[in-house]
Length: 363
Ligand code: HEM
Image 1: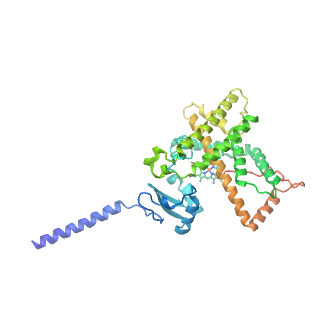
Image 2: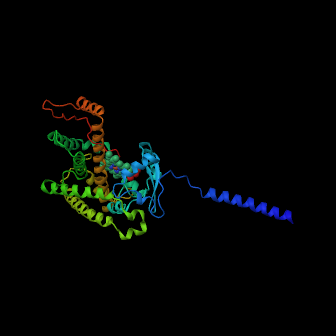
Image 3: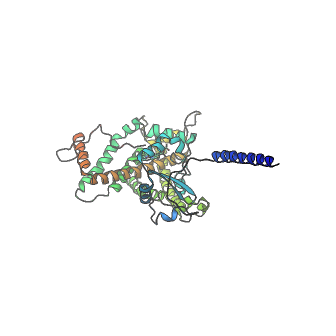
């Protein structure tokens, strides 16, 4: 009898160990990177400070935990990457794995509910829009066609800086305006001229800046999705207000463009088409097997380009200038390169160089 009990006990123990190994191996997930401890339910939220700007805190945590760390913010587990090589790995090398990231409440409101390229899931609709964007707007032919326009707009910004020599210049704001000017021109060309065009540009500048600020605001609805319907901080409501304003401008511009197109007032030569013209032609493309996009998708892509192409470039230039001011050796190298490659006229003005590409997006 004793022997029987030993056999049963041994069999039971072996089976338990096998079951445990199988169960725990089956459930095993890759280890998470290190990160600061939070408290139950709220995670690390109470420790990120009262400021709406998360980035200084993330930089501080990066110094402690290294180039990749995890952070629990409410119900969301966030993984923060903090080095150029990791950024490359995620947005380029393993792009397909990481591209379906969560869009925030503000992102969704600003992107016509992810009808755009940036926040759409990676599906065939996204692939179509991306193809249109890359092939038509960012193609060499399209960029070359707008080279002169970009040189003129950037030249105006350089003149502004020269006129304010010795005085402080808000370089971020200047670059933002310059980039917006370039982008509006590439998008819908010179179709809105005169005072109306200027009013639209001023209105656009003010609303787009607010949209971008709001996109970066910490929103409790993002960390506790069950609370999203209450929109406690009013982020969704505020964003919808701004989007309505931009939407009105887009509709106005599209209507004017369509009218001019139908009257044959806009040049239809290949390579000289502006991006909106190309999008409108695709909208009317009913042939089977050809790319066709909707009116909402057109506006969503326009929003991507305006919001994604302005602040990003402005911040990059602002940082580059700040770094140059802190590093005078690099600054004088850059100045030498400019005078060797671009040159200066007798009056001290920059000589326009036809072969120099002034502004090319990194995307
Ligand atoms: C210094 C300037 C810029 C920076 C730092 C920047 C940064 C980025 C980043 C980090 C992404 C996300 C990549 C990913 O999730 O895989 C992105 C995507 C995108 N950017 Fe930019 N960008 C810049 C300029 C521009 C400009 C000028 C435009 C438009 C004219 C633009 C339009 C887009 C679009 C449409 C996407 C979505 C691409 C996709 O989902 O495939 N960006 N950008």
